[in-house]
Amino acid sequence: SVLPDISPSRGEIALGEPRSPTVDAARGEPAVKLPISPLEGEMSGRTEGGAVEHSRRPIGFFNVSHATALGIALPYGSMPAEKIIALAQHALALGTSEIRLAPGRALLFLGQPPAANQPLQHTATALGFVTAPTDPRTRIAACPGTPACASGRIATRDIAETIATENADILDFTLHISGCAKGCAHPGPTALAIVGGENGAGLVVNATAKALPAGYRPGYDAARGIGRVAAMIRSARYQGETAAACLTRLGPAGIAEAYRQAQTEKRK
Ligand code: SF4
Image (tube, rainbow, N blue to C red; front, side, top):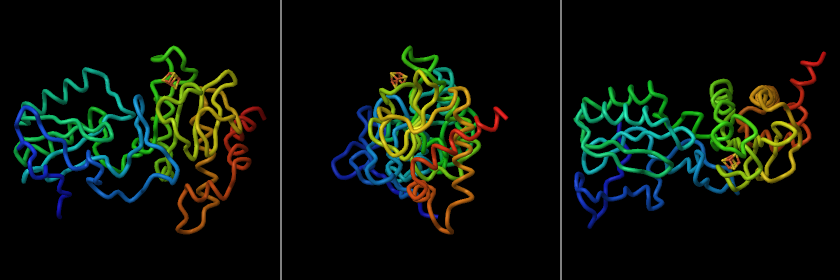
């Protein structure tokens, strides 16, 4: 198969120089075309959280300067230091000579012999890094939330992990999970956002984290509410319809009702 080529262009410094070039993807040219595009109107994220420049994330194998580079990403934009150190040490042992920052909070590993790419990717996967462009975590923007941020009202990363594990099949849109209404991980609107607040985990539909939620659930139980929304999408969507289009068709009231529904069942 032909690998996407993100070789440096004319005039850039060759691989291995201390002041390494930025790959073409960083200048706005998609490194690899992914099957899913961001929804229209969505803004790219910024600082904390998994910002959602889907089409520009160099995750997987790429040709860089006539060699194969391995791109991996940090889930939601961060990883514990010990895991980054472990991966870097393993990469060093396998012959990686350079690690570059890349768009989408990704890292490019360069210089290792071709036979080292698969073992390095396996190690990254085992450590919890994002190693496939289809990883559902690339569809979720999640700030640190509680307990990492004093303003956080919900455990954003735990909720994100549960949703990514249980509902990957419907994540063809950006899901924003925000510890509070500030919305650090994704300032722009998303199809769905879970936002921590005084009333628990609010569900915002097609708006930013600052908008008034259409429904609430207890913060610890937010993932189950999204599970209900996912179940509704699975049963309601037409053949070939994306989950994003299905959500638009169902509308905020129906989505919010599904989100709250699990709570209703619990009380029976
Ligand atoms: S959105 Fe709120 S909880 Fe999340 S990082 Fe920003 S201030 Fe903290």
